[in-house]
Amino acid sequence: MKLKYAIVGTGALGGFYGGLMTRAGLDVHFLLHSDFEHVRDHGLRVDSKNGDFYLPTVNAYAKPEDMPKCDCVVVCLKSTQNHLLPGILTPILHSESIALVLQNGLHVEQSALDLLGKGRVAGGCCFLCSNKVGPGHIRHLDYGKIVFGPYRGIDESEPGPPEELMKQIHQDLCNSQIECHLTDDLPATRWRKLMWNIPFNGLSVILNASTDAIMADPNSRDLAKRISEEVRQTAGHCGSQIDPSYVDWVIDHTDDMVPYDSSMRLDFLHGRPMEVDVIYGNALRAAERNGFDAPIQKTMYQQLKFLAAHRPTKPAN
Image (cartoon, rainbow, N blue to C red; front, top):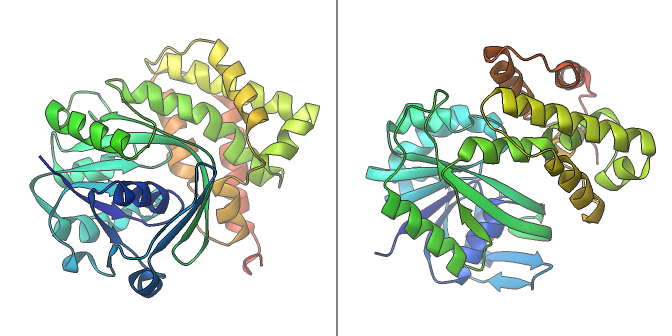
């Protein structure tokens, strides 16, 4: 069966993965906003460490009402835009469509589950360094792995999408030269990603520093490691046991990473909403539900909320 895919949010993430899927011959349809006309007229360009490519023509749309019904809607919007999902997803869905939510944070899939209902939502974590550098122009810097699986709700009681459909999506992504893994334990995958996102997204804003600067200073490096360990302990109290050695993996791989500005820092510098609540707030609420105090994460959450409320109104150049 050949699936029809929609990419909702053609930015650094959606443009990169959707571009690879299109290049591989999959049936992919892109929903765009500010650069719709550019991509419609000039296509999509991806500069990648794995090899640059250019797609002169893609299926580009400015409105979801103009799109065909798709079997899998890949949600690549920032979670700060999830309030828009009912208006975006409803026109693209048929009765058996599923949403694959590729967003940072914890329980970011819940908005889609509330809309689509049982058995129709999957979630995934992208271990990717990429930026959108211009209209229809993505620059892939490092990594690129996706780990995804069925989303079963906050209490883990909901059914996931059909297994055969999940396997087909996995095969399609692998055939697109995307490193992709299918998991039956999405919560643990989310917590592992948070072990990087919580220290490095937040510190990049609070300290006004890119990853290489954080790692080069012994004080911030030690702080990042302690935060990652606290997130690991939080995960354990919430039912996801992660080996202590994974903290060292996070630090070692950040050492090896190309110098990188986190998405949260870029959002902060450009005056855009930051994903503070889904990354920090949801993790803290999960910790509270399970009787665990996470003091460093709570401090970071409060600092980031303050910075978001009091940053200069003029975006950085």
